[in-house]
Image (cartoon, rainbow, N blue to C red):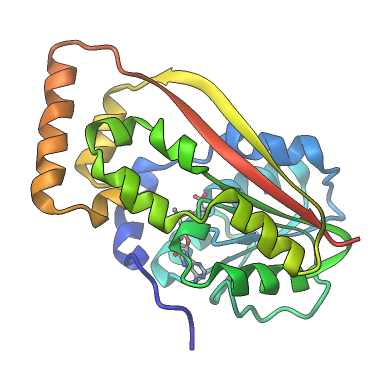
Length: 248
Ligand SMILES: C[S@@+](CC[C@H](N)C(=O)[O-])C[C@H]1O[C@@H](n2cnc3c(N)ncnc32)[C@H](O)[C@@H]1O
């Protein structure tokens, strides 16, 4: 049985690409850490509409497979990147043999997973000797400093429940037999939020907004709209944590 989805990504897929783009900043720490070339085999676990799959494939020429549970997200992925391979499966029960990939990475997925321990075990199984698992997520302090946390304060406690603490991810990697486990936190330069941030919020393009009570969502949206209409400059830092483990 596939893992239960917490958010209906088949619905979300209808607007996802209007509100999320592939971001070179997100994959640069991976490119800096690993030598990837056309001989590399990579799994993008929870690839969504292939925003980062496509970017990594075009830069490295590597053989990348995208895996996702949502048929809706995958139909956009296949349309955008017909040359890449996509598979519909749950991340904690994949159809690949042991030792299939040099790199398995996952961007912004772990907080959607019911059983992250089982997921990390499964993804570790797929690594060749010398291969790496890289989980890109946010620490609890990075969650606190998001723009969305300022306008929608309840999202902080909601997301602290959804996002496993970094130390728990590291421990699960070690229990799965991975070595040299470490996490590297990146604070990207603060960005001034343009009108596209408001548009994304209006479309509930951030998954934690789908979890809020409608009245809290409307209250935060009004605060945000007022800030824009008073010409307030909204500048917030964005930060991600890359948790690495290696099959030695
Ligand atoms: C926020 S999106 C991130 C997509 C992509 N990694 C990116 O960076 O744009 C989360 C994705 O995780 C997928 N997902 C959630 N639970 C999953 C599971 N158990 N197995 C596979 N994919 C899953 C969703 O369908 C969705 O496409």
